[in-house]
Image (tube, rainbow, N blue to C red; front, side, top):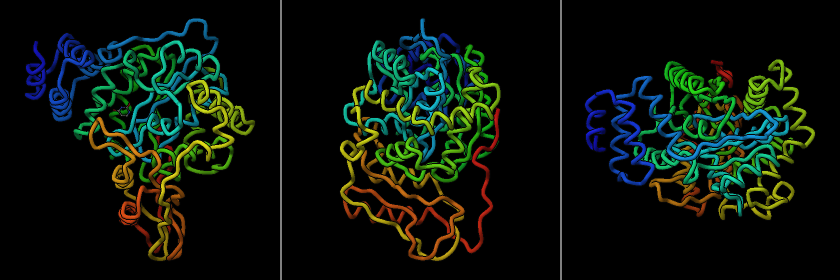
Length: 435
Ligand code: URA
C-alpha cells in the first residue's frame, strides 16, 4: 500500500497489518516520507490508537529499521532504564554510572527533549566534545571500559525512531501509548539488552496525567518488552514538580555532577535514582533483594566509583577527562542569572511542572521545530521542592537566561506555575507504584 493509503486507513479507524506497518516504517527510515506524511501518520495514531498487535508490529519495525546490537564476550549483565519523560528528570545521567559501578553493562540509547520534557542527549551535548553518535565500535569500547555509554539513535540504530521522534516533538503527538511504547522499546530492543526498567511518569509534568493512563502505558511497555524477550518491569513515579532542583540542560548536568559528588543527598531525586538502581540490580540478579541492591548502589556512589564511571564515559565519548573536577572550565554559563523570589509567606503547595518545562523551551532550552538548535545554558536551578516553607522575599529558584527580557518572562512564568498556600501540602510519594 502507498503511504497515503496507510495513513488514510489509520485516520479512518482501521487496523493496519504488520506488513503495512513495516512498509511505512521502512520508507520513513529511508527518508522517503515527507515530514507532513510522518506528522499525519502520528496524528492518526494519536486519535485512533493501535491494537496490541499493531503496537508490537510498530515497535519491531522501528527496532529493525537499522542495526541491532549484540554484546558477545561482555562478562556483565546488559541492563538499561528509560523514562517516559519529565521535567528536571536527569535520573539516567547518574543512574547509568551507578549501575555500571555495581557491575552492570549499560548501553543506553536516549532521546532528545520531547514536547515540554527535557532530553538526556541535549543535556550531554552541553559537554564540549561529547559525541552522541559514535560508531558501533566506539560505543562498544566505552561500554566495555566505563561500564556505561549514553548515546542517541545513530543513522544505524533505530533510525526510524529518530525521525518520528523529531516530528512528534513539534506536532503535539507525543502523548500516545502506542507511539511512546514503540519509540522507547525500538531503541531498547536495538541495543541488545537483557533487562530493562521503565520509569513511567505520572502527573502534570508527564505525558500521562492520570493513574489509569500511566498504568495503561506501563502495561503496554512491560508486555511488549517482555514479549520481545527483554525482562522488563516498570515503576510509576510522581512528576507533579521537577524531580531535580534544576530544569534545563547545563543546569541539570551540573546537578548530576553534584549528585555524583555526594552533594544532593536526601532528595526526591535520590529516592528515585536509588529505587531504579536497586531494581536494575535485582532484575539482573546482581542483588538478592531491593534492600541489598540499594546498599550496593549507595556504596558505588559514596566510594566515588560511580563518578569515576561517569568520567570514563564522558572522556571515552570525546569529552574532557577532568569534567568532574573542573566543570566551570567546560560548561557554559548563561549571561543572565537572576533569583526568583516568593511573593508571599506560606508553603510551596503545588507546581505546574509542564509550564516549567514550557518556560525552559521559551528560554531557548528546547525546540519549536525539529531543525532548531537549542541554548544549552538556559533554564532554572535552585528550585525549592514542594512542601518547603517560605517567607516573602525568599529565593525559590534561579533563572538562567540569554538576556534580561527572557529572564523576566521566565521568572514571571515560573511564579505563575507555583501555588503558595497557608497550610503544609499533603504530597504524593515519589515512587507511586511498581508493575
Ligand atoms: N521517551 C522516548 O524515547 N520516546 C517517547 O515517546 C517518550 C519518551
